[in-house]
Image (tube, rainbow, N blue to C red; front, side):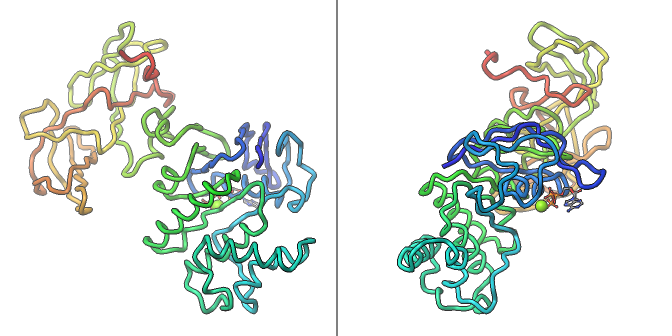
Length: 367
Ligand SMILES: Nc1ncnc2c1ncn2[C@@H]1O[C@H](COP(=O)(O)OP(=O)(O)OP(=O)(O)O)[C@@H](O)[C@H]1O
Ligand SMILES: [Mg+2]
């Protein structure tokens, strides 16, 4: 059980600062997921927490104590990497027990811990095998098992499932969720996978270029992204964006003009906005309503349809030339080249000012 806190943490490699000052408190027992584009500093942040890299500036605390100078062992943290380096000449049992051999645990205690972890991960039958006799998914579970047997206060996972096929990813994801539920350990998990982030996280931390863009529950980030970056990053396919212009402002709403010429009244905060300002309207593919051509002011032509089975993705070329994406149920009858109308339900739209910050009113003030 442990709370992990970062206070103005910075990390430089030579002259390049890759972590730009991060403040974050991860509560005891919380499941935190780091997401962000490649190179934004996710792995570096995990390595700093684990003690595999030195913090250049700032403080790292575990349960209120500064641990900057503690070795990885002293921190009570176990890390699972994307590339699970198992010892090829050792059996699964030996691989899992290896970290414990040097501890003061008795043989019996070690044996018990390994068997309990193996049971939980459904690799109990494989304990006598060598890594080369295992599938990729089984090897990854051994790597997770190796972390579990150490009974750490904090688990760090760096894209642990990215080498697995789709079905195994789902299965192992569920196992990790189960492991969290049982152990109530603090977990920090890095992934590129939206579904893993949304389903596993108590809170998601969106990182960009070594900085935190937003921290929130998965649904907070989905429904109330604080800025364009988060809006574009969370959700797949990506949110559609339209360059628009402020027409008029009222106390609790902002009227904007769409590129097509249409007008939309948004429940936005008008402070700091003025008529003529450039703003960006955002709407997710699943919230765009597709109608028959002529039923809506906004029109487009279907460029391409991607059939996903449970849904269709329509790539629609709208007036002005840009392409937007709409998600429709899989049984919707649409054909490429067809003309459609588009409706933008304002309660599902997002509005961002010219600096890219959301200007939507907080939900509690929506009537
Ligand atoms: N040992 C190092 N020396 C110099 N630069 C490094 C070192 N490790 C990482 N970097 C740089 O720090 C930045 C962040 O790297 P990091 O591995 O943390 O990114 P990431 O978010 O994990 O990316 P990915 O999603 O591709 O794994 C990158 O620009 C990387 O090149
Ligand atoms: Mg990485």
